[in-house]
Length: 299
Image (tube, rainbow, N blue to C red; front, side, top):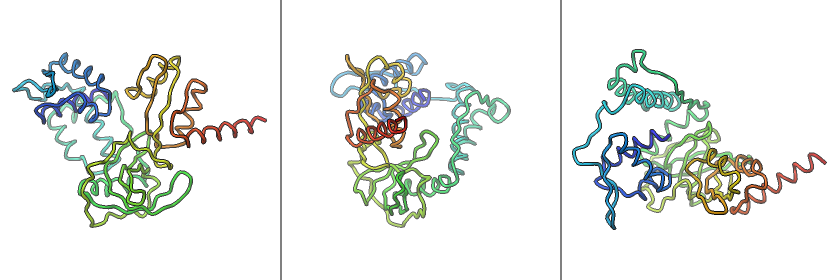
């Protein structure tokens, strides 16, 4: 959400002397142009961000600025409060203290002032819930973790990983980790993880870790796809993938990791001739197979 990002950028500027637009764009996984728009909105909201040009340029908060609870209305607090409560329901016990602290900052949240006009549903199945807490601890403590993983194709394999982060997308929880079996970053869906065991072995975070968007996996744990759309479907593409597209005079490019191969195929098919798969080749092959199956169905 934009509100979350604006708050996070403000806190980032408060903790660092100067940050470049490129660094912020990489940190929040948006374009540099989006960062400039965010900074403009922050200035309009009364948060004094100063920009500097040149080789050592970047953004800084005006000296002496600090955030107080007066910067947030009950409605603002309510959005954050409900998000934390929903996350607490999925993870269990991890953010209880933080929820209580937020309630103490704005007591109206605890006495009927919590307007749930926006509801965050992070409901998780039991298989995911059992894995979230130990994985969260393993990530914080940099501990190697073992588990069995069942891919979307039904193949079961034993994995030994260096867990990096947990994230929630499209109704499911995922783990990003460095897989010691594949010797590369991989995305794992928590509902497919069994026999999870956090070991006593500790690891040092690798300096060359790639982000989620840079992972080019060739199995069902994640697919980095480069799709090219016709401008005639531009509005629909922007609504479906906000902040992830690159505009050109003759086309729109999308570089995105799809955590479900079936979803990637369905996206391509839904746009018909208005989209072209630039890469990977195996996604092209899967789409062609699906088209042939559809043809046989109607013959």
